[in-house]
Image 1: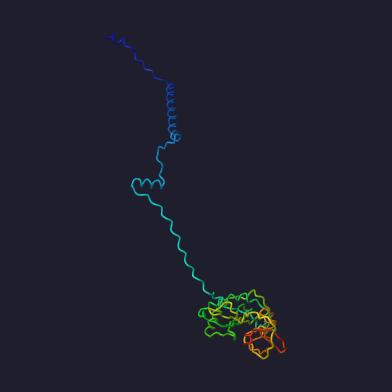
Image 2: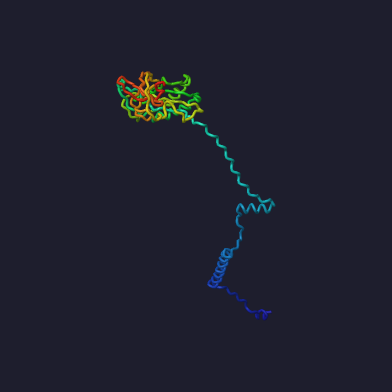
Length: 301
């Protein structure tokens, strides 16, 4: 038994050193890193998608239709354009066109002491007044009124306002209509300031003559306040006396509305008629025998 055991070769175990073992682990790490890099880069280079993309709404709807078998929606037609609304024809005449406004006529003026001045300067109240006067055409309850409305204004520059408004003698409208116009005029001029208007005196009395046409009347209709130019031709002699019926009659140098204003004659003044040309009359209007032309309705002709 001892001889058999002695003939077996001895078992030899070799343990690698630390140097040899580190080299083998290093190679394994390099191979793993190279494989990882190739695994990341290769799908990008080859254009292969490993994970499906998030579907866009259109694609999702198409996919849902394929799965459910629902028919595809047809595009809705654009809504038809609305039919044009027929325009309402305008009225024959705007309300403001019913009012024909004369030039402003300064009847009198007073100085700081309240005494009446011998002569009055022409103040620029007209640029403020005309807009408000045109608005009287829309005064409630006067839509069918037609005739003459004379409005007198008392301007007080000391107080800086229109002190009062009253109806003149040449007004031809019914009193209830006049009262409505006066109420509208007072409301319209209540807050009109006089600041900025050049003036020489403290207070002024002036008049406007308004001719109101009927709603069906023509805007081109000649009026007493804005007469058409007199027909050409020589004047004819005339004689007699007349009384001024307008609140203030303008006496002009010639028988035309663009003639120079020579004088202003107040209502009730007696004048002597000396000639006629168309719708104009030549009159003597003072004790000196001064003459000029007035429109026929100014003296009731």
